[in-house]
Length: 241
Image 1 (tube, rainbow, N blue to C red):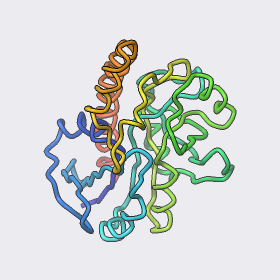
Image 2: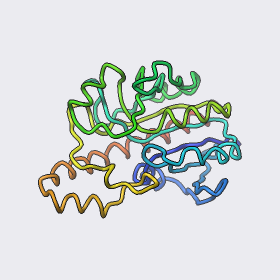
Image 3: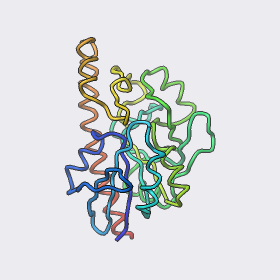
């Protein structure tokens, strides 16, 4: 049976896919994982937190699992006007703003993702923080197509272990949409959003509520799209071997 590793930053990103399958809790190198059988593939999922703050501590887990492939997934911010909420992007390369080289997605996995309907993004940027404003995203557009906070960190680790990898993202906020709430301020030390901290922001700034509700609804829709896409991708992987 093929072993695959899938990472999400946030619990909320994983939840729609988790509800579609019987993921059961397990652990590797003292880290919590979830595992489910999708056809002939045993899929291991773990949450790395926004910005993957504990990425270095997962090194033993990657070595112990030794998967045939690894996918980093979740939401991303669009940096160019052609990307819209709900678009599934697969990155040809992942880099940081100051790193022109970066990491390339595995060519075979990239081709399979495109066959399943993903759109190719030539360059995904991994940033140290959330790009919240329209002006910031517009400035970054010359450097990449979309932005996240984890892909480059994880793909470098997987490359060091000889694990073929893929960066796969769904666009949540397009380039012309600001992120009104300060979600970074609402995160705990593990990079997970604490809803109580978000509610405290809304209580102190009621004008943030319409933007938050719009984002919540968009997140619900695009993460459902991502969950369905992952099912299609793993079904195709199962058929192609």
